[in-house]
Image 1 (tube, one colour):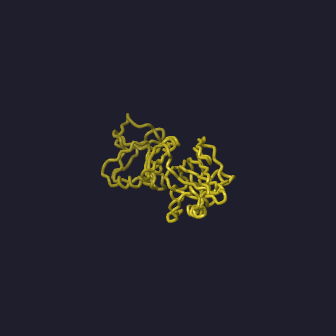
Image 2 (cartoon, rainbow, N blue to C red):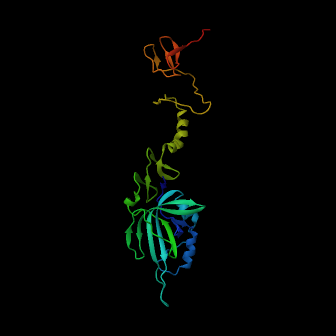
Image 3 (cartoon, rainbow, N blue to C red):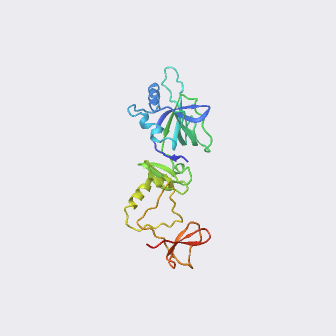
Amino acid sequence: MHKVNFRAGAVELGHATMESQDIELLGTEKLVEIHIKHNNLPDMPDVDEAIFDSANLSFKSMIGLNRRCYYIIDEYFLNPSEPNQPPKPPSVLRERGVGSIIEKEGKTFLQRVMPLVWYDAEGEEYLLDGAAHVQFGEGEYIIVGSIIPPTYAEALITPNSVIASTVECDPTPVELEESSLLGRKDGFVQSIDMDELFEMIGDRFFSHDSKSQKQWNLKVRHLRLERKNAALIAPVLRAMPVYTDKKKPPEVQGSIIYNAESNCLECCDGTQWRALAWKDD
C-alpha cells in the first residue's frame, strides 16, 4: 500500500504519450523555458525563476517516491490570433485526482491512480469514475502540480483514513493498515505497523527496562531465544510455581518443575515425571 503525502506546491513540466496513461515529469527548470517562450500570452502562469529549482519543487523532492498525492494536470492549447491583433489566451484541458510518484528506467512519472474530475477547454467540469483518464499529449505543453484536495470527501478518498497534517494548513489523509497505529515517522504522520513500531521503540524500551529494578511480568506462553548460541543468564534461576505429587502441570517433554514433596527438580520425558538426582558432598 502506498503512503500518502497530499502536500501542495510541487510543479513540473509534463510529457504524455499515447502508449501510457502515466505522465513523465521533466523537472521544474523546464517551466522557465516555457515561460520565456510564451511570456507574451495572457493567462500564462507566473514563474519566479529564482525559486524554480527541482531540488525544492519537484514531485520527487516534495512528495517522495511511491507516495500518493493529489494532482492537477493542465494541458495548454495555443489559439492562433488574427494579424495585428493581441494574442488570444490558450485553452486549457484539466484533470485532477489521486496519483502516485513512481520511477521507471531512471525517469520520474506521475501514475494517475484515481482520476476524479476533468475540465474541457471551455472550463466545463465533469466527474470521472476513478478509472477513465483524459487523453493528454496533443497540446503545446503540460504543467503538473500537487494541490490540497478541495473537499474533505476527496481527501478521504481511501477507506479507513484520517485527516492529519505535516505542514500547517495542509491536510493529508492517512490510510490506516490493519493492526497498526497512527504515528509520526520520517517527517510524516502515517500508519505504523508492528515491525516499524518495534524499530522505533525496541532499542529504547529494552535500554530503559534494563536499568529498572522493578519486577517484569510477561503473560506469554513461551519466551523463545532464536539466536544461535543464545543463553538465558541470571544470578538466580528458580522454577515456579512449586508443584506436588498430586498437582503437576500437563506432561510436556522437556519440561522442568520443582516438586516440594520430594524436594527435587523433575523433568518430563514425555510420558512421566522423573526426578533429577544429585550427590551430597
